[in-house]
Image (cartoon, rainbow, N blue to C red):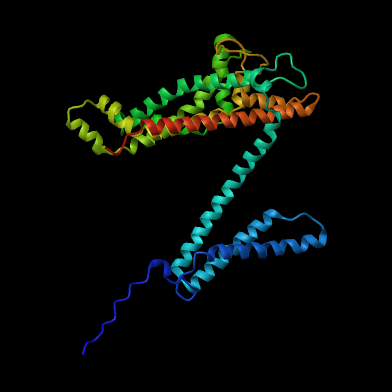
Length: 368
């Protein structure tokens, strides 16, 4: 008599597992989105009913605030009942962080959309290949302002970047614990918070003592911008250099490499990505300044490629002057102001992309 043995059953695959339910101690993946949709719908109903009765416009900001608060309350209570207090607190904090991120993105997106929508109207081939020389009303362009912005910012970077990097190297590598280093750190912290108009007055006062009052030159604007750039470069570079592990320096010293060569071949290449980011932050900090350039570089309507002779126009000053000194038709001046603002934002974006590429190319490779 033979006995038959049933073949073993294959285990169920992961795709056949049951999805979490409210009674399993874990909310399903769609639960936060569902709660968010319910909160948004309830908030919309609360603000839509009074709107229909009074005929007023829908309160979008109030809808978003009430919906966000209602979502936080609901997700916390439901998670506490199903998943427990610990997971509820985690979902609450996640919701708060996400909402904070959304709030931070609102002005950024709003400014970007506003500038793009208003700036595209004034863009044309003439805007990029002509200046405002002998132009009244419609027509003209911002070529002189674009060239002036690039030249003045480039000169300011040439002045600021070496000074800032070498100062940071001294503070981290040579001046640790010395009174001179402490004094430099204090002055850098003070310079970080000075108003931009003070930097412009400083540059104007220096050149006025040498060349007399009323002087306006592009290099004066570069000096004023460098006063604002140097502390940013120093602080960002200093922080990046401090992040380099001391073991790398000690290994280099153990091989008999002198200190200056260790800094040049080990410390700086290791932190080049962070230093590049800090430099770009400093350039972005000053490229849109208007007050110091009004005092130092002045206002011009024609091309000027010489930083050391005559006034130079920049994009921030161009946008300001076009908007504040509107002629006939006024819309042409407004369009040129918005277009200048859009071009300035594009220049900053391009510089940041170039900085990221440079940091990626020259940063140390971790793989073999």
